[in-house]
Length: 254
Length: 261
Image 1 (cartoon, rainbow over the protein chains, first blue to last red):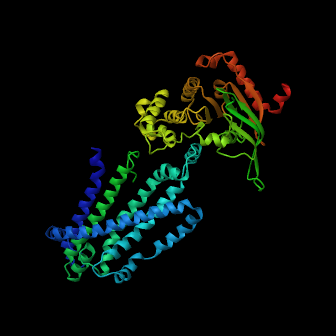
Image 2: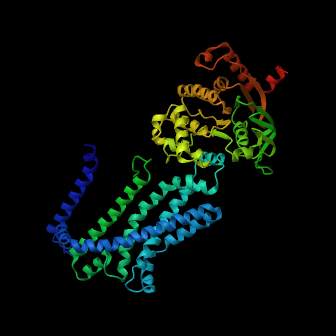
Image 3: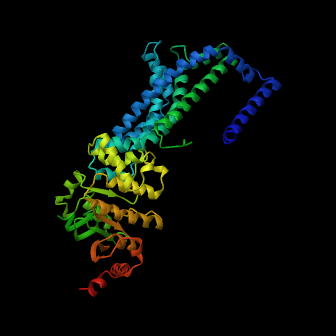
């Protein structure tokens, strides 16, 4: 019953929005290049499901590689920065500048640095975008140590490395996951958008641009739906991972 | 051999700066083997500072601290004492059992041995059935009991406690006081206990050390000689006499010293 009450309203709202959308397009005779009807998009989605799946897989692999790479580098960088105080003070504004850069704008330049069939530029773009939320959140987590824990470890005569491993890292885990939740959706966006700038034509982004250039709007939208589902899959996987990694948090924080 | 010997101890924070504070001035204190000594005084009297100096969590400006015949730093390196704070300081990502195991783990004890020892310690504080729980699932009093069992896990000859029951309600507090006394008697542990509750200090201690602020120093020492340490004693004549004596020492400071030359 509680389950119905929490899941019911959003589903109902979703259905209402789709019905309203369908009616507006049908009754208002809106041209499909402005916005196609949900029924048309759904037809295309079902028809193209094999292609959507293949394209989502290609984009998903790029997003995953970028996400993992950016996360590993972000956590390592945060660990290094937290170890040396002056470094951490310098690194945060530096990371903010990096974040303010329109990284997507680098995609065409990166594309020219590698061969046209290479996925490396997409991994790099995704990785850079993932880096910032992971780095900033992890650094904050590593710096926030309970003073009681600090004194306790001191009373055990624990070394700096032991302290980092037993206290700092597990203590920073909730912060890492906060960053990862933001990063997981960003990774999919970055991987899809990076495809707009050429390179391999196998992912969702390139399918959307090519469908749009053939004026096959419902098909373009079908791939957009695919991108949406891919982003959702990434986000939900992160939530699941968070739950598995931190069994002491009995409930998900939302 | 005495558990703790403090001689001529002075601690100045921010020495040479505008915000220089003399937290402790020329303090001498001896805690005998197996003795339970409370440090009591108003906020800012340096009682927590004194505890941290004994534990070598701070280093003295002048004077010496000897723990079980060794310099305090050496005692800390050998995990020569267990410590508990007002905050239980449990690690939320570790189960209760793994929290108690931590000091043993850092000593390099084998997995099986430390598990057995931690289970034994949890049994001592009556929390065996919560071994697999996470700290967040326990009440404040239970968390504090876990913290005490963790402090005692390495069988330290000395236990340092900084207002461990300060955040608990009165009933839980009294129950834990009795438990603590039983445990200390059973394990023959010497204890230095910081508190600002007079009744707590009197009930627990063989000796109550009264301190006063600006600069932090010892103003009086009250010996408490209760016939027993059970709840009945809380109503006894001797108990009230000791409470009154500590209260007067706290209030009077210099007066009390003048009255009893």
